[in-house]
Image (cartoon, rainbow, N blue to C red; front, side):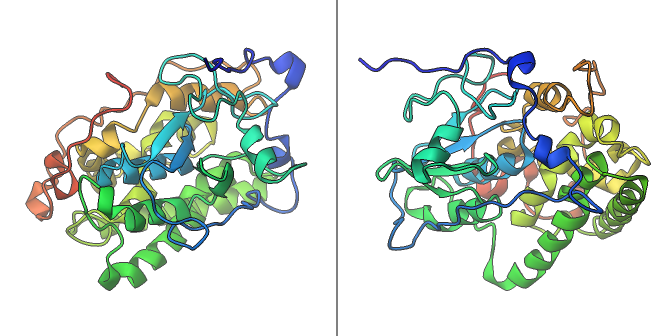
Amino acid sequence: MTTVTTATPVDFDRYGDYGTSMTRPKGAAFERPAYRFGGRIGSERFPAEAGRYRLYVSYACPWAHRALIVRALKGLEEAVSVAVVDPIRDGRGWAFREGPGHGPDEVGHIALLRELYEWTEPGYEGHVSVPVLWDTDTRRIVSNRFEDIPLDLNACFNAWARDRVELYPAHLREEIDALNRHLYTAVNNGVYRCGFAPSQKAYDEAAADLFEALDGLEERLAHRRYLAGDRITIADVRLWPTLARFDTVYGTHFKCNLRRLQDHPNLWAYARDLYAVPAFASTTDFDHIRRHYYITHGALNPKRIVPAGPRPDFAAPHGRDRLGGADAGAGAGGVRVVSPRPGA
């Protein structure tokens, strides 16, 4: 009989905050840590096989959220298993505990995510991040690169996918790649550049870039349903986690408060359109999001008080059907997705 392994309760007094190296100024602006493991599914070392790989995620983390969305859109729940960490993280990093929407890792039987990193690279001292794609056969990390994992989930497991929707079509890749580069710099990482800015100058530059980019997206979405046209692509997957967190946490916690998401009519309707797709809604856990950001980042919120709001109504009608494209209510490609957390 296997013993259930979980971490001891969160203890900031004993272990401190995780990520002081992220919040401590290294230069003129916020710098994201390196992601060391870059294996790819479909290589000789990591062939595509159903049931072999396990995805380690946090519902709170936007980078992990993107992998969860692709897994749900493709219908890969039976092909690629998932382990969900506690959204609250002390100095030991991501951990497994019993709680709403998370629990023990019943495959790896680890208490701390760091164990996977140390098994892969003994003595590992780098950043312990999610998502992690884990090879259960070799017991090694395939990848912790958030930009690669969704692409591999999209491309490499079609033999076991419930829906073979293509999120990175060849004829749109040049446009999607350009979009993703811009989204990462100005928006996805831009909110972190605001929140963890080491100086007023760095914050001002990041905020200007962020809201200029949002204005550009607002204009782009005036006449097209999705970022690359009339179908959901990996670019929409890239943007949604930032939009979902924008008014909920980034506006207050990261000082991204020049305008709300709800002050951008097209972006706000587009966000509600995406939320109507089960794969986006079922992987979005606002409770995990709020508690993670406000409790974990002690440097930004020393009292660790979680505010009651705001609570944007993403389920409100969006009215974007007039722009054509896929019926968002049915999901991309007609996929039906079951929520990993009923009622979330």
